[in-house]
Length: 231
Image 1 (cartoon, rainbow, N blue to C red):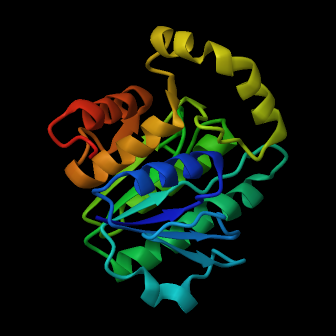
Image 2 (cartoon, rainbow, N blue to C red):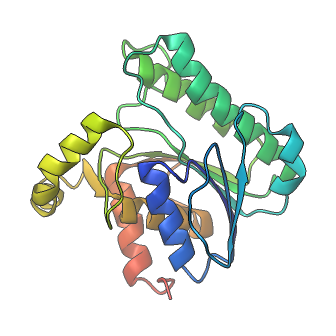
């Protein structure tokens, strides 16, 4: 399987990239982002662009891929709805539109968030914008689209968030993660599981187009222990 990852330097994207590089069923990984990952691997190629809202100069490089894992995201704190729409909806749609033209047979997996508002009419600004983005991606002519809606994501293997107050939360809750995972399986996952579940959805599909936190964990668990487990 050949995959494209957007946002591989973010917390979630780092975890997804790690799983893709570890998984022998993923033959090639193209990372598209604003900054280089700093990783070196035989199956890794990178495209670094300051402006991800216009991918026309590199459109030809997006052909022939089986899946896209779109992990690029930003906190909405301190942003207006117009600003958050620009960095969330506009950038995601630029990527999805380009890929739907160059690799229409692919599966597109979008990292959204728990409580995303698919009606686009709710009170939470970020949830409306995420919902608008989900809906627009789902209308594009891909083989399949999956909207991942994780809850709390625990970073693993030394991965860190670029947001300082997120890092503080993870430092506090990290030691409690095993307990939180047992007590709140509907709300808690980790970067390993998100990456494993994305690969599973791209290879075999998922039960529903909207993949909630508990379903992410189930997909990851099936990948680890099922007949199609990672080599």
